[in-house]
Every structure is written in structure tokens, then in C-alpha cells.
Length: 297
Image (cartoon, rainbow, N blue to C red; front, side):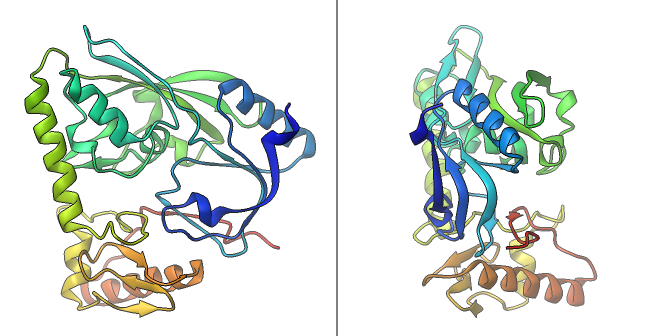
């Protein structure tokens, strides 16, 4: 393994969309699946835990950072598109908006809804990302994964991934997504698909606070209700803790307005949960994944 592949004490705030997070004890950005296999072998030899990141758009990392090895998959990018049958294979680090625009330009439909989601394909599979009543599970054939314990690489089909609302077995198993195979619809009008794709991006930009660092939606919607509306009805828009604020634009966003800490975000999340439970009688569940909060440093 190249000595330069693994770095020590890297600020994770540079790798999350909230711009929050302490130091990674060890950190790497592999560009190939072979490098990921080498990294897992290194971590197993050292007997240190492994954590993976995509675009860092759906995680809250502790101010204390993460022990062990953090693998950032953003540089694991390549895609194979069959414009005849609409089947595409995408490596985990590919940004969702990038691939959505790419297939739209050649008349392949099926990802228009995803164009404004600020994450990677790998993260989308793990979280079963969705918008506008669609989700990645609707289009996924299979995902190639690697086991953190055995280094074994294998595929899981749609059914084996046990998808639910913003959920999959990948949130619980010690697996890293390497790539995803999707079945989209070919031979459509590129102009029409692009128009819908860019309309979705524009709508997100106009209704969500993308001018400030955030993780996207913080809470899952308690269907058929919307978390943002529940929070807004409680008058919590604009509530601040430290450098963090419940967005004045969209109440299901918590934004980093001024060097916020993870503890500021966590406090606002707990505040919202308490207020919603007191008013409505049920608990809002976060979409965002918390990392490093239970570790002892």
C-alpha cells in the first residue's frame, strides 16, 4: 500500500456538508476498489474500527472526531451507461446530481427526482434516499459491497437490501457499498427530461437553505405528515444554539451559521424532538446519522 494513502489526524469538518466534525485518527481517500481492500486489511491488522463516508451530507460527526480509520469514498468515481436498455452501473462516490444530469442528457429517464440531492450514489443506497414520492430502491437492481470483517466482495439484490423508508440493512451491517446497478428507462426525450431535472434543482434551491452548510433534511417525515411543517407550526424557525440555527427557510434544516459545533446541532435536534413529542405525542426520528458520540477519547 502507498504510504501516502493513509493520513493521520485529519479534520473531518472538511469532509461533511455541515462543515462540522473533529479529527479522524486515520483517514484515506481511495480511488479504486483494490485500494479499499488494502485499507480494510490494514485496519484489520491494526485492529482498529473502520467508518466510511460519502459526500458527508447525511452525517453529524462528533467534535471529538472518530477513532480508527475513516474511509472517504468521494474519489471512487466511474460509471457505465447502457443507453439501449437503460441499465447503469455507478461507483459509490459518484455524486447523485452528476449522474442524474448525465443520463438525462442522453434521454434516459428515472433519476429526475434525485438531481438536487447533495449526496453520493453509495450514500443514497445506504439511506434509500428519496424525494417527490420516489426513492433509490425503486430503480436499484443490486449493490456491490465489501465486508469489513472478511474483505469479501459480493452483490446484494434489491430484496436482500431490505429497503424501507430512508432505511436499508446497510445501516446496520458492517458493509461498505462499492457500486450500484440501476434500471432506468431509455429512449426518452432528452430535452423533456433535462427540463424536469433542472426544474427539480431550481425548486430545491428556492425552498431550501443551500446558501449555508447543512445536512439536508434532519428528520424523517412521519407520513403522511411532514416534519418541516410540524416544526414550523411550533414556531421554532430561527431558533439558535451556538452557531447552529433551525433554518428560517425550511424548518427541517439545521444550518451552520457561524462555526457551529456538533454539540450545537445535537442540542437543537433534541430540542425539536422534545417540543414535537410534547405537542403531538410522538417522536421525530432523525435521518442524519450520528458518528463518534459514544466513543471514549
